[in-house]
Length: 198
Image (cartoon, rainbow, N blue to C red; front, side):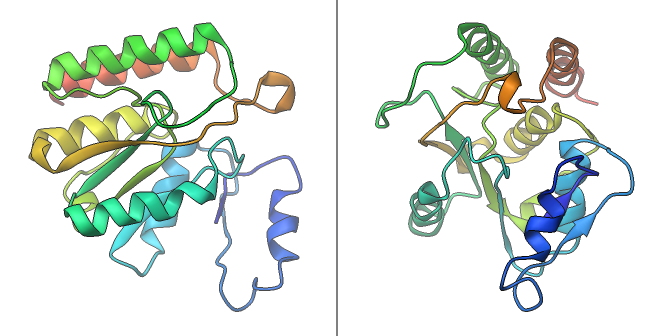
């Protein structure tokens, strides 16, 4: 688990867990760097050959992890993207503006890399560590997901799939962190890696 200099009691909760000394690693940044930086820190210290990203806010439920792992193992995909918009799950209603911009960014990325994605911003991503080592990811903040998907598709688009996941949205009052300026950054990341191919 990676604590990106959180101001709440997340790190204390992790330390209080019964398995803290036997099965959980807590990695802490001394200053806030962003989700992409936190994910890279976590992966740098993991020992397995399969990587699954799970945000700690529980907008996405861990009960979907077995479905993702089953598709990964039985269908031999290199990358699985969770989607909050594919049919197959019942979800509560939530912000239309958030939905609109996510679909806009997903469609733009899909056109630029010629792979149909429905939800590039979904926090659930499952992939092999071998694939990750080929990507040279650089984005520190919320543009990380777009960079990860685009660079993966440019390597091998036939080994990617999406599966529906459950979603329990938060709002700003519940601690939602993404802001309008983050949307502009995500747009630039899509253009940067999808069109300009940096």
